[in-house]
Image (tube, rainbow over all chains, first blue to last red):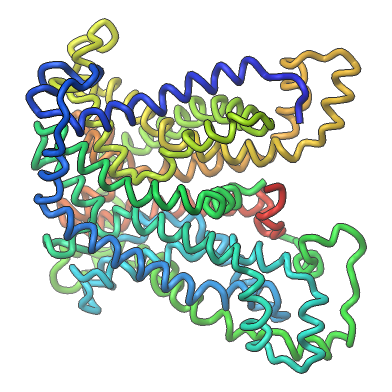
Length: 272
Length: 317
């Protein structure tokens, strides 16, 4: 750690803070202004009126439904990830079979498969099995694409469990399943919460799969709702920004509660 | 990828000599999970990510409009693609986006990351704010910026000395500049985080030695910090390449590929061919181009970043 303050970086940091914070401030202040006032004074002026009408507009335009759909998708994705990733990571970390190594390599490769690259066949597949325009059809591929990063994060955590603990379990005659339930899962709580938060964030912010795989109003998720609002309410910018703000609230709340888990996951995602 | 099995099995914390496995190999393997534990996730992942990779190659030789069954047409889609000026332009645009993204984001993230790795109190609060854009969906960010840049109601109207007539997204240069800026706004936090983690791991003794030798802050940064961050720079740049190649929502929502085809990058071109013109064969061919490029990059990721050495991601936090 440096002992002297780094002025150059410090100045840069404060300039960047302004670039990050000003648009967010403009967004918030716009949502509490009437359309007329926003149009007259422009986005950079201080609000003189205060109204919640924009939020009412956003909610009555179907945002409640979109939220419910996004919550369903997010819960489904997190559920699948928590069901599939722990046994996989356990096998990767503890199995002696060469196949487990090969599978880990495969998931590493999967990190860089862009969803766009496979969206046509996924569309074909979802169509064929009759899940088009069904939230389950969004959940399945979203979860699949969350697997590689979650596997890497969780197997990193599981690697920190010392061999002595496994040996102690083995001496007590524990089966692999028993070791998994009594030792690995309890000791991986940190990693489990990280992958839960991480996959939830991916699912909540997902756009491409819902765009391609759903169609009707009843399956629309929040991100698509925003996209739709843009064309629908093009000139009602305060209303549009109220919808954007609403879409951010759950994520920001989650960030407040799970900051550590999230930052750990992201640092893990970047490697060292 | 010549990492040995023995190396992989070593627990992350064991810095010293590898501990022998008591009770011998056969004894302890009784308590080890079999391959079958990996199967459910692997099958699931295979179905939605790996099988489609093969399917996209097959579909690229077919004509399919979304209805009925795909028809085999040989190399027709590929011939059309090579003759398609938008495709060629989209590859150049993708390259331009990637290069501009790296050039704008890397110096800033290094500076911010190294700064945030220090240990003053207010840094924690500030870095909490820095990370906010990282949490937001690309859709929300794009809609936000599109509203902020609206020619009639947005910021450009108030700052005509900077933005001229205010229609920033109306010209190709303006649209590209906006996309680069929004990418920077959105992704700098992520790369900052990478550098922050790496900068924390630089041994303080290096700086102490440099201080004794009379090296100033800038000199220390250039001679110690930057070389020590080399691996992180490589990782971060590779991730930027992959990210830049697959940028999609931002283009769709902010510019819709325009003006004209001025910001139609390859991923967006694929979407247009497949899901707007219902030409899934050509769309698949473009997708395959994306697959080939990104697979090559992913090999580089695995090799360069040290992911396959499986170091713990929890250290240093």
